[in-house]
Image 1 (cartoon, helix red, strand yellow):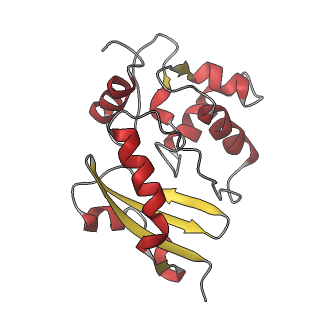
Image 2 (tube, helix red, strand yellow; image 1 turned 60 degrees about the vertical axis):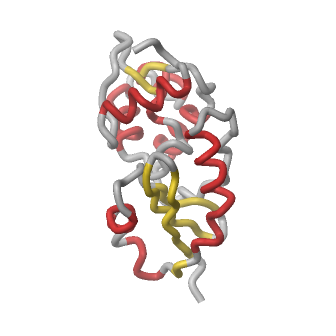
Amino acid sequence: MSNQFWGILQTSLGWFGALASDKGIQRLSLPESSPEKAMEKLEPKLHDAVFEPDKFEGLRTRLEQYLTGDPTPLDDTLDLASYSPFFLRAWSACRSIPRGETRSYAWLAIEAGSPRAVRAAGQAMARNPVAIVVPCHRVIGSDGKLCGYGGGLNLKTRLLEMERAVPI
């Protein structure tokens, strides 16, 4: 019996693919236009996972509440042990950014314990496997400009506007 399971979550913003272990969420795709595209974002990690969408109903509900402007925290337990210690520290720091606020990649590097690792902080955000739960859309350039986002700058802008983080 597998200790990994997956599901596809329909929300008002689109379809999310989710993969988890008994320890926590391992992957959450950004919203896609179809369930098939959301599933593609989880591959090839699905080979040993069991399709159990009901296990993600709580996450789907919290995501939907978040996407409609409710201040519901997305504080789900994560299972990201296979990543580097720096990435884990950067993601933890990112999760500490309050809703409605932004921080720079330089701030993120400092919080992750490596003040000179600004590019590495950017890589941690670029490789974030659980976007929105680890709100990498709240990380912006030191000049205050939006830069880089796996779902595109339009989605980053939309999420920030929804949170009323910055006037765009």
